[in-house]
Length: 538
Image 1 (spheres, rainbow, N blue to C red):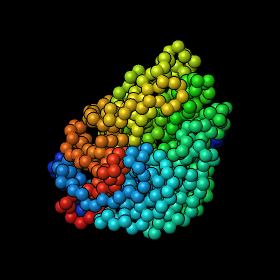
Image 2: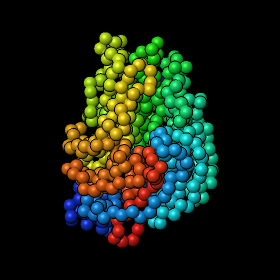
Image 3: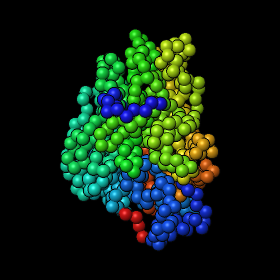
Image 4: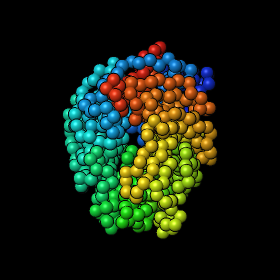
């Protein structure tokens, strides 16, 4: 880990708390209008106590905790029933890679806002499921994408442009082209804070991924006009001396924002991976390849690097540190949590970037140090091809974490890839052979508390409300698990395979079947609702 406080940093480089019966009544009382806290009680609250009731951000809040207060808990989750469904408007053949929907919706003022993998934006009335408007872009993207709604504007991106829409009508207010080359694209839901929209390009789009010349650039845009405030190059634009072959960096999920407005970003991997026949084991991009696979803290006013910690220098296997950073406190210490496709969860000190612990999750088959061997030129320690690597390019912690007061929840994929030659693509194991896990990790120590096994990949991140953690699996199921024990208490089958997380807002759980494999399967957004709660959630 290196600290970096010079202005050159900008250009140096791309799926709770447990509720017993009485406690549950107290929480539900709060939901329906209990008296506010006294000032003395407020003084004793910690950062992790400030849990939102509104799923108004892509990961619930600006700390990316994916934790929400709601009436839904382990005692009533089995009574959830379908309230409405909305078809996803993407004309596509069955098994379109990687499906037609991969995001988490947001809910603002009683309206669900979301985006499909053709970049089209939907506004849906939460209470009725009535579609209010759809803004069609027909710009195919790999995702995870999504929108962010702040101050009456919907912020999102196509494969090339960041945009703002009027939240009431869907009318476009501004659009900015951000990509520099035909090998770049945008795949993230924007972060929005203090009048600034944060959108990153990355080294790929639906037509070309890691084909050379694509670099990650984070853009800080004025939320009102779309004008540039500053940019941060997550990799050098000269791509370590070979712009025709190399690529890398980019940010795939929204940043986290602390109380001062500074932001934390997780940066993706370098390429080519493994390498090429002429330049094996990433030798066309010598060195650690900053800021790939790094947690980076940036000054929100200037984009300067405050600190960075690279967890995987000279990555070989497409093992991004791609998930949104999560801000919380652990035993009174302000920390940031990172995770990615390398199959590790990391905790850093928020002030200094010091690595406090790291925990391996899921299946690893002995290649965790191959990047260091290649970095140091120890090629005799590297495997002979063909080689099967787990986690593979679609493995590890591939979607965001959730955090409550004591525990981190990680959805994990055990999906291998076999490299026959140096050049991609590898032979990816069949999807029906991949398995998944939901893992609970102690927030303070990094110790694994429990693991829930699934027969299918857990693509659906983690979402926490009260004493439940939700995830989805590729075989089309939504799962609800007790946070304390990992015991599954409810599951439901969606009308197609799932490549997206769920959101919880009030008495509603929002899910989507985003990857139909047959003409009979349906791509649609599905809202589940508790049948007997009073009032409603706006």
